[in-house]
Length: 286
Image (cartoon, helix red, strand yellow):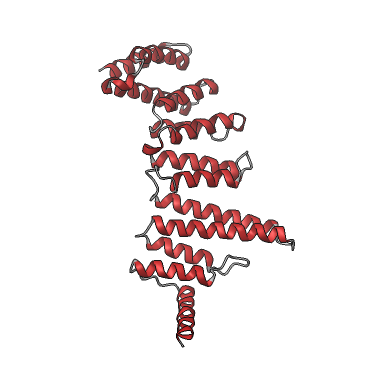
């Protein structure tokens, strides 16, 4: 009832004010203040408070969709407040990202707000929150807006290898990580295409090993997913020039894992490599 009354009064204020958005925010602030402090001590108060914040977010989206004037900094601050209070609410996160992801002049503020949603309570962070945080970090890397391959990788590691993370078996994020590392390798190969220095070769080899490690980590975290195995085999046995290749010991590790899990995978290049394994095995037995 409290949230419904707040919504009705806010709608009336919005429709009758000369500065509808700011005026509505003032009224909503007075309502939320009445439910504070420490709303989480009372579940009903916390629920009502979140509903009011959700209504404010819907109001913001409707206002902007109708091409009405607004102050970006004011809207950004209000959404950031909502995310701080309810870091796992996907409505607040998705609205915030959709409105401000391209505003590079406030990118650090955006980044810290989005990261708050995944770092505030790591044990209960949702897949949506992680997807938005990682997507934003990858976007910063691709546009050279401040993120590096290392910072993106650190976020993936915290998300998919963290002991407390509840999304370690999220197949979509594992695919995204493998694609990201593959893109980093492609960029390195292109950058050093005409270089013969040992430093360039070491950088490429190191990234190829990083790509393989992501696949092997995913193989451990996604034991049921045959598609992951095929994706990894295709990644390392492709026809592209300078594509990474499996070493004998690495391929044996993959084969042993598949054998333990009783997985049957049909891949021409993989089967050819298995024939080589069998040949070597017979040679050793002789």
